[in-house]
Image: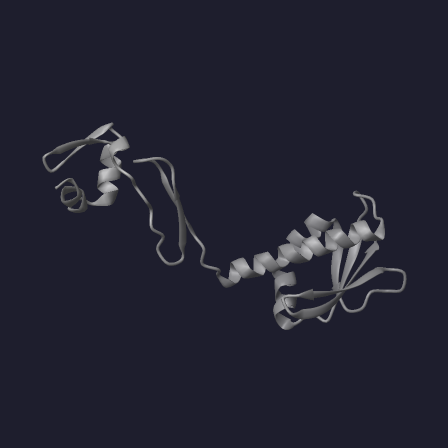
Amino acid sequence: AVRAAIEAEDAGELAARLRGGTVTVGDFELEASDLLFDAEDRPGLVSAMEGPGGLIVAVDTTLTPELEAEGLARELVHRIQNMRRAAGFAIEDRIVIYVEGATAELAAVLATHDAYVRAETLSQAVRSGPAPAGAHIERHDVEGVQLTLGVERA
């Protein structure tokens, strides 16, 4: 009888009412400790719940083209930062980045996120084409694209 009364309720409303301490469901008075709540994710969402009748947080996990581009920019920053260390640059050294072999998509990401990439890597410029002699050069596979990245002190 208790289960039938609970199932007849709207789960969201029931959880909200439980914040008051007790709730009447059908002919029964229940406390939060009498019930077990479980959140079920909808497609494209991931959720977590804090305690019975508590806070539920859901995060949209849909990857938009903008989020994918931002992720790619962050991946390039990570690789360039590792190259700075491998080249022995000081933290405060300003650099110039060279990118050879970028696809149109990758070039668009670099153009869109140019200010972010330059700020995070202390770069004065991101240039398309081969790096000059003396630059620290590495080959990278970025999302299936073979790139040659170069860094040199500015």
